[in-house]
Length: 182
Image (cartoon, rainbow, N blue to C red):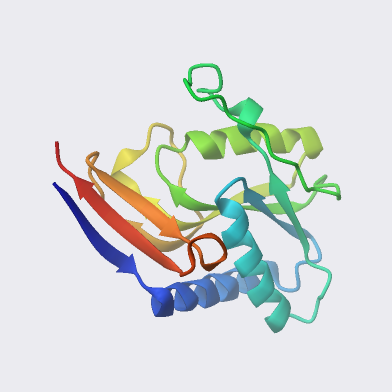
């Protein structure tokens, strides 16, 4: 039996984006020495939303933003039945000595973030790396990775799944918790 529950609706979605944007401004001021990088595939939508909000608030209209493909850095790359298809990488700036904010939609086991940190080093050595996530599934970590910025913390068990729907791809902004008990 599957039970669905909306845990973040459109209104909360917008509030979270605004709150996280202001938290970033508190720590990075005008983003002269900071860059935003969305982890493909799902972190890109979130990164673009954060970037759009920041651009409307801060005076620096040249905030550096990019997309990071982690396909070949994943530890399950060769174990999957359905082969992963790499995406185009869009980082046309150096991250050398910069404060990098990695952005993803859901932090679950931490393996995607680990892969992103490995992939990031191909673009230089950052001064620091921070993690911003929309949803933090706190009880599922395989690696000791914790986000610096969190939209919502969710205590989900292994039979539950978090689905983030984006207006750009699904027609509306919301986060759903699905309980599919066996």
